[in-house]
Length: 89
Image 1 (cartoon, rainbow, N blue to C red):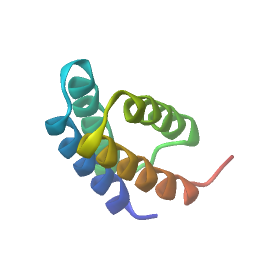
Image 2: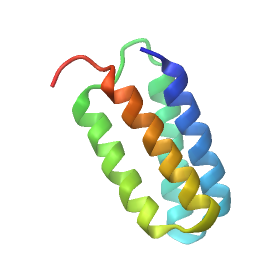
Image 3: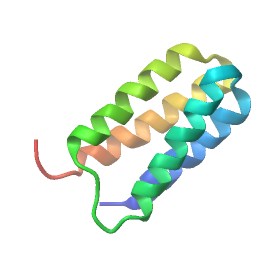
Image 4: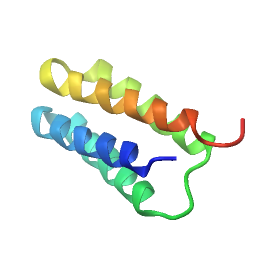
């Protein structure tokens, strides 16, 4: 399973955070940091944790627009692709 997808998603969220305003900006930075941490861990995330991130990114996509929204959607897509390769549920 490629940790690169998590790193790419984290980077896209950094881009989104720069473009976003208000509370969404901080939430995007937080999500970016969380995904970067997951990418650096040897032990991967489980489906539940990834689902929570997916849900948060769906909310953030609705709260943003323009380039920020595009970056969030792209990050969510990368996370979904990563999650397909996770064993379990």
